[in-house]
Amino acid sequence: MKSLFRLLPFCLLFLMSVIVSVPVNSTGDGDCSDFEAIFLRGSGQKIEDSDFKAFQKALEEQNVSSKIEFLDLDYPAVSVSNFSMALSTYLSAGESYKFKSSVENGIEKLKNHIKIESKKCPEKKFILAGYSQGAMVVSKSLPSLNAEKILYAGTFGDPKLYLPEGKDSKNTACKNIGLSNYRVYVPDCDVDEGVLTALNPYQEAGFRDKLGAFCNMNDFMCGSNLNLLNPLKGHLSYDSVNGYQKFAEIVADKIKERKNSSSSVKTTATYSEKKLKDVAVLFDFAQFGVSVADLKQYSISSELKQKLVELGRSGARVAFYNVYSVTNRAELLELVADFTADDIDKVIDKMNYLNRDFRKYNFATASDNIYYALSKISNEARWRGNAEKNIYLITNVCHDADKTSFDGTNYEKALNEMREKKVRLSVISEKGEEATFVSKTLIQGTGGMPVGKDLSKVRYSKNNSSYDIASKIFSKKFELSDDVTLVIVNDVVYGISRDKEITILGLDESLDNSVVLIGYNAVGQRTSKRVYNFAPNLVKVPDCSNAS
Image 1 (cartoon, rainbow, N blue to C red):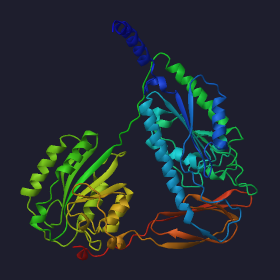
Image 2 (cartoon, one colour; image 1 turned 180 degrees about the horizontal axis):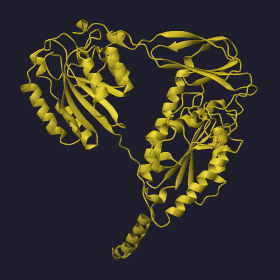
Image 3 (cartoon, helix red, strand yellow; image 1 turned 30 degrees about the horizontal axis):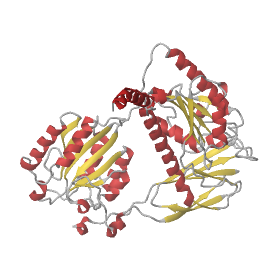
């Protein structure tokens, strides 16, 4: 026993030495690289394809002393069409719908990756580069990224490129006058925009000197002239014309500048997860014939109250409105409380009291003023310009799409104005499906959410399927007048047609559709650009009398 006690101190020392030598998973700077270089590949490319390898090699050859991680972000990068030099007169649009979802997937993955890594490594900066479809992902992601986290971003062959100097009738770009800050390598001075709808503005304010655009000569994807003998040569050669080399040199200079400026003072840039949000809560007294019993149910539930209070604590602002159907009120749309993030619980308690026990209602008209209210709030509410805009409609009635408000505003006008102002409509009701029966297309059309009193999602039964957005396949014929025409369907470049007409088959009426026709002359100079947009066809919503 004595020998055991003699050994005990040595055992304790041994255990302590083992404990302190066990590696610990840390989120501190010790486990973090200085920079992470993220590449977004082009359509149909595999992970770590030739462009990624050229990008990585160019950066590694700069021999910067800082530690750089490399990531070829795994997103679909779908290839949905083989480029054709001689398109037939009939094309199918079926596969093109995958392209948009691929780009959106890439944007979300890039944003989420930066968010996660920024939490783990607050000092880490990110280097972004995208080629072709990947360039679209990068350029469309920038508005939602914290510029403080990005060291530099480059786009190569971006179909969404926008260079306003190329539109100047005085050809100032060809004189090296008034060039865009982000124009790094665009030798064709006539380039003004890529083959898809230009992203304008292309450079967000926070990304001045942090964004570089690269567009090879004869890369028609980003707006240069078309090489009729070899149309894809310019677009496929970024890994062989030193484009990534120039990008890497700029990045190396940025790293040196950062090290020199931060040698004495260490700063921490944090990634902002907050997205500004404004919510206008609208109580619906807008339809003739609502009973007093129904009115007494028009109060904000405890569940919704808690949600709104939490939104206020997170920085969201909430406003409260009532809309009436009466003709003898001075205010058919009453602003009860303007946008605020403070004391939302007290505002809700006061509003519930007034609506249940104090207000006098006089329903004197059969018009449906809900469309007037939705339109007026969308246009005139004190929304913050960069905030997500929402209307939470609290209703226990079904609205008839055939009716109009007192001022003539109807269902279609309200929907179009909410879309134009980017306002989302969500319907909240203890009656669930019954109350949101006709609102479904309004909700879907604005990207909102139908919810029940407990904030759970309302599910529409199968027998209501006739009120969905129409799902119907259609075709469209186009006349062509240029020597050659580049045909783009739903952001997918199909190829070149030399015919005088072309028919696009398989267009889905339930989705947004776009057809872009870019004409070139016999030497490959762009001579025309026509853009056709087809909005989803909404099925006519029937009378509400069948919804009870």
